[in-house]
Length: 542
Image 1 (cartoon, rainbow, N blue to C red):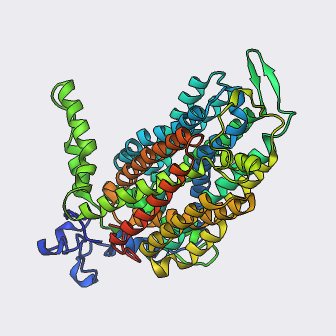
Image 2: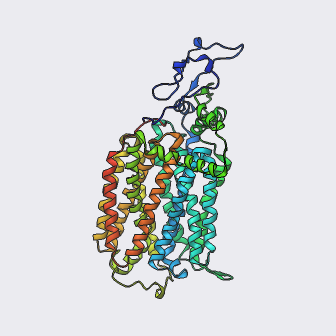
Image 3: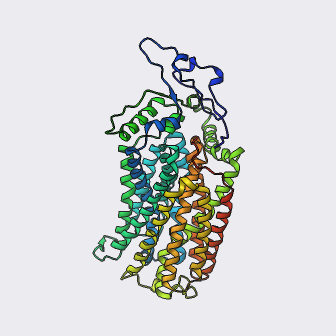
């Protein structure tokens, strides 16, 4: 992938043995002459070859480490899905306890996306500056703690606030987890493995739907805590926070920092240690030893960071900090990255408005299907939520949500098998167009079975688009701005998700056709615009 700027990279150990014209290539990588005859040896020391990032990843092999990494990162991805979808599954019952109108439900589903919008770029920028692992630990902890506290909120406004803060944590872990994961992967396996990571979102969907199905209809979970009437949906909220907290603990205790980040930060010793851990686990039981090598690190960036320190007044330092934080956005929309950034901006907006706007309302739409036969069958009836009873809970709503979540599986399997062959661009475009058609027919159908079938098709096809977008997003930007870029686009997506949920909340009772047909049109637009993206199949991470 072409780079927007080329940085000279200085080796730490053998600089004196290199000619000036050997320090950089036209692709921004160091070209080393690795023959021993050109490198003088000290007494009793061997010459040490130096590897680029891609070469070091290949040298570390592929095996047990990567599968363990997939499980840990996948569980974190699933925990984000659980936390996001938690609200959609509790709406049919919580609306009675919290006295919610349709507009209130729209605000509640939008609250976590507002938090994700705030947290997305902030955490992404910090991950590019301070490290992926540290940001993941903190953001997952914020997600789990405040998500759990929401379970004991007696008032709607407090529940809304805690869901918003939880969303700030989710906004950090989603973009950073894909940057972190991709930076351990060999080039030829990257697409399939990122697709495999994305399938854990489906696992989170199924877990959330399964927990809702098992817990919310149960009457034994109902008891009183002083002023709080603790219903079963509150227990469901507590259980939904557990995956995030366990993910944060696993990253804190088990996982290393990204070697690509360490190399860009000039930390050669730490990066070498990570590669040695990878090799040891991948070659366990094979009797192989890792050959000695050094790394081509970005010592220029390290020296710049060391030279940059606080100066001037507090106001000047704040202005400098804000300007520095906005620099990745400026770089994204200048030079050779501009066209792809504009295209991704449109695609993220279209898919987020469509997917989250419709998905978060599936349980409520299925409830309406139970009453009227189609999602919009009772659209003209006045909403008398305060006079409706939420108990006993209709388990069919959660069973249908579980089926729709499970329908992601074929799309995920398809993506894993074909991603490295076809590439993300074609899959993204085609899947968005097919999703558009399926949403259009959701509006047209009149029976419960037809609505459920088309919802499953939408779910299975749209997940291909998300998986493709996850792969493309990690490969289109260089390491020093990868998490910032993904965080920015995640924030854009959350703005779209907020607008989609508010639109559904305002129009689902009066004119249900408008938001559903708008979703169909936006998905079609995103599919056509995606054709303008560059192909990234088997490209190197820069």
